[in-house]
Image (cartoon, rainbow, N blue to C red; front, top):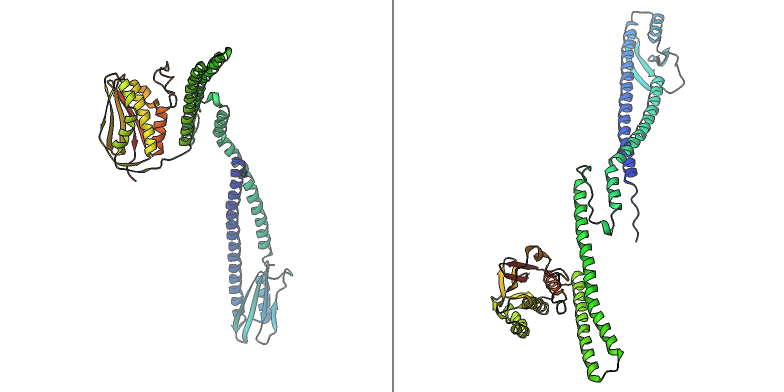
Length: 438
């Protein structure tokens, strides 16, 4: 199932910047609007309070003033305040004073209070029409909304430009990666001009390229070795068959030809069988481990099978040590057979091949030790590669196809273990380390 594309990083970041900017500016504008509105409210309340005090004072003085004088003083008090209206009503409900409202709108704020006089209480109503304040607030709201929108657009555009500028190193890396191909895996990404945040990525990619280059080189070498190993017996088979068909032969001659061809076919079958085994190991096949009380007994069984080859090579053999463990006996016998066969081919005539079983911190180490030519240190890590030979002349290729130690390494991995290879002063030890009992 295809995954939905996440979109361009620059566009996504620009959108988020625009949303964050809009939210931030909206909160700021809301704060400005609220503070301004509260200031207007405070001013309106203060205006009503001051006018109330003035009206109370004038009404209190009316006890000694005539009614006409009071009305005149109230008119003087309301001069210049078209936004204020005063209404006075006596105890009998008669209107003593009523200012003309400056607007037909509903008042914004109303203050009602009573003033006690010699003739009885007077009810006063002050109404404030803050139409100008409301107009200013409306204009301020529209201005703030426009400013928030414009600011968000500017920040989004600037953020998009900054993101594009900041992603330029990533685009440069993408260009470098795009030119890589199977024949240019030896190239490495240039991280000298990259920011430090991308340095780990460049290092990881270069490490990955190094591993890919090694794997690709090994694959090419493996393909070449497979072709060589299979081409040689095929050529022999084709040549032998052509020779056999050129003239009439008796049954005995044909039997000899077929016998030689059968050996080549068996060798090819063995190569294919070993390659299939390695393929299964690479796909994660595991060993069927079972308790074995004596590994030395398993080793002795395998050595008995190689007894004739050891005698023919003029070699002695010995088994040192013993241990118990949980192993796949069939796989371990195959690994030991490959190790002993390898030692038989390379051991010095008249020497002793020693199979040693030692308990170590990581489990049980089983290694085959022989005396012969010292293997250079640079070759030791590659001994378990497929078709790898220390001798570039491929000596002994007609009997050994170069997969024996690779199979030993695969069997060790299938048990969850590792391999070992040591060589110094003519003593070579090759083997495997199997984990202890589970």
